[in-house]
Image 1 (tube, rainbow, N blue to C red):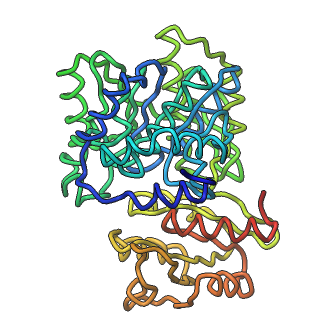
Image 2 (cartoon, rainbow, N blue to C red):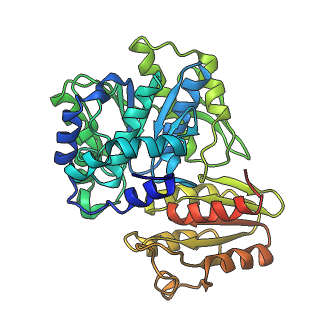
Image 3 (cartoon, rainbow, N blue to C red):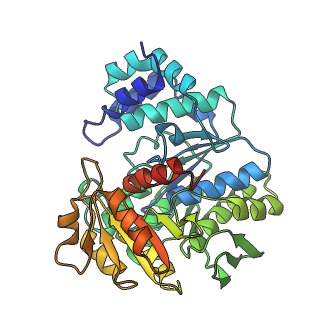
Length: 411
């Protein structure tokens, strides 16, 4: 029996070894009676922007008075954050209770950490009778543990090269894996424009008789410390962020709400405006401090880094970057992108079994190598001339965010 949440999380996080697939989890969930089918869900996949889109959707639905569950990964502060209701994380007591009730089943079926998290989320959301749940895909789509639901709407934000060991090394193969969340006669939305990916989505939708919705372009976009844009008949939509890439994520969330309306879900225009303007997603171009000016951003792959750099190009003060990443990412390309906007880049490393060493990360690039990462941040704060941007792996950003939280810089 587990005595506390630390024991539960230690147990769960060790359960990571098994071939990538869904068969064991499906057997287990069928044994429970497929209780997940009782939930009204939205399914959000894609290479980047899943978390932000999920958060915008949550904020809109919550502004309309609904109780909203969210399932996201990885976490930024605590494992509990993966499972939330109205943006409040699951409690220690609930985690312990679910683990003590079901851990023998998890052992019997050999469930992995992500599958256990998914199962707990289903039971937790049912127990609390939430109105809607937004499930963010963990990896890929077709074989992801979240792909046991029957959503009202499915979303793929975009496609980029990531997790190629699992999903394939072409855009078509990656798109096919992510298209696995498209369900029979269920509306499907994407912001992706690359024709190779769009072809896969259209063919899958045609095969499954699922309405295919291509996101329209936002227009009259005004960039600054905040962003304003128009989308369809919505004018002066406000986002409290300077991050250019959030226009697409917010537009996807807005379009998803329009599709939910067609299904009979009541969502007011006011809730859409209010939800989008008030949403803040931790670790995505998040301001840590005004003086000194410090941001953190989980640009953890090539696609995410390009989105970050597109925003940094408009920054009109000198930028100091602190960067760390995982071994399996296109780190050379990511560094080259950063060096397009600043010649003041510090590379570092953090404790994680997939983390890339600072020296390997730096290679022959004109960057500073400073370890440990706390020293790298200290150096950046002491020597910067304008703005400090700390970026890279979401696991790194999780450590960094906790570092600043412990110092009282953020709540």
